[in-house]
Image (tube, rainbow, N blue to C red; front, side, top):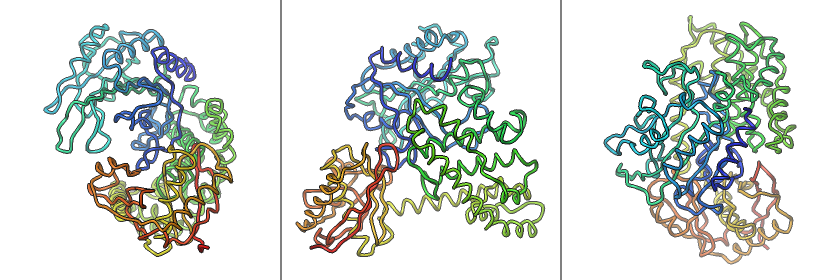
Length: 593
C-alpha cells in the first residue's frame, strides 16, 4: 500500500464514522506564536481541546504536515524525520476509550489487513498521581490481544501532556507491529529499541487537568487525540525496515546517488538520509513562508539546509577538507525538484513556490560559503595551535561566529564533542533567558518613535479585525524607529479599499486622542476580560494589560504612549504575503494634518 492510499483510507474510514475532515494547515502555528512549527496533528486544535466549540463539530479527522527538530540528531537512522505527515482523529468531549480503541483495531486489522497476532499494545501503568489504565487494557483483551502482548509502562512512555506546567493531559495507549513475525518471547519488547517493534498508532485520552499545585483533577470535557505517522506506517505496510526505501524517499535517494556517484549502502546511508529528510523539511518550510535567518523558524531552516549541504559534500569527498567547500557548487536542485514533483498534487502551493524554494536553498549555500571563507583562516590557525584535539569551546566559537558546523571543523581535526555540546548548551540557556527578558519587559528600544509605533500596532491589530474579521490574529511584529512590521493571519491579499479603510480607522482613533491605560493582573483575569493574548507561556504570573479607551485591549510588555494623539499619524506603505494564510503590513509615522 502506498502513502497516498493509506491517507485516503484513513480519512475515508473516519469520515464514515461521523468525523469532519480538517484542512492541512501551514507549518507555522496560527494561534500559537510561542511555538516555531506545527509539531503534531493536534497542535492546531489546542483551543478546542480546552473547551472552545469547533465549527465542524466534536468529531474531526485530518492529515497534517508537521516539523519537529527536538531529536534532529537521530535523523540518519532508518526511522527518524524532521518533517513528517500525521494522520489523526479527535473526539472533543464525544466518544471515549471504547470507540477509539475499537476503531483503531478495526482500521489496522480490517482496512490495512495487518496480522492481529503481530500487534502489541502499551498502556499506562499508573503511579501515585493517577491510577493504572485497566479500562484500556480490558478493551484490548476483549478484542483478542493476549495479556503477554499488553505492556504497562510509566508516564515517560504512556502519558501525554500537559503542554506547559498545567492543563489537560492523560494516559495513552500505543500500538506496535512486530516486523519480524517470530514467536513472541521475552528479551525484546516495545520501547526498548531492539528494532522488532514499530510504533504505528497512539491514542491519547485527555481526562485530567493538572493544577499548579501538581494535582490531577478529572476534566469536565474528556478528549481523544490520536496520531498515526504516515512514514512509519507505510514502511510496515510495505514489509520494509527502512523508511527511506519507500516511495516517499526512493526518488530522492536516487538523485543523491547520481550527485555523489555513491550507492545507498554502508556508511553512505546516514548522509543520504539526512540530505533527503532535511531538504524535504526545508522545501515545505520555505513554501509556507519561512526564509533562512539567525532566529526562530529561520534559524531552524538554516540549520537544515546547511546540514544537508555538509553531508552532500561529505559523500563526494572522502575524506573531505574544508578548503574543498570553498570551490564546491550547489548541486541539490534535482533533489528539491523531485520533492516538489512528488507532493505538488496534494500540496499545490509547492509548485507555485518552486522557483522561490530553489532560490532560497541556493542563496543559503552561497551565504554558507561566505561564512566559511571568513572563518577559514581562524580554523587553520586553531588547527595549528591545538594539540591532537580541538577544544570544544573553540569549535563552538567557529560555529557561532562564522557558521562553521561541528562536522566541518572535525574534517580538519578531531574535536572535543563534549566541550562543544556544553558550550552550545550554555549558549541556548543564555538565549532562552534573553528571550524571556524580551517578552517580560517589552522592546529593547524605548525611543519616542518606537513607543509611538508600538502603540500603533494595537490600533492596527484591532482595525484589521474590524475590517477583515475576528479570524485575524497577530503572529509576529518587528519595530524600528523608521517603521513597524506586523504579521497576521488572513487567507488573501488585501484590496486597496481595505487598506485605506484600515488606515482611516487608525488615524481616526489617533485624532480622537483616546487614553491609553495599563493594569496589572493575572493572566486568567485578563483573558476573562477579553484581552487579546497570543504569546501563551511567555507571560509571567502577573502581566500588563493595555487598554486604548474601549477600542482595544491587549496583554503586552510595552512601551506605549499615554494617549493616541501623541502618535501623530500613520501611513501603511506595504502589504504582502509571507506564507500560506499569512500577511505582513509595513507602516510608518507621518505628520498629522
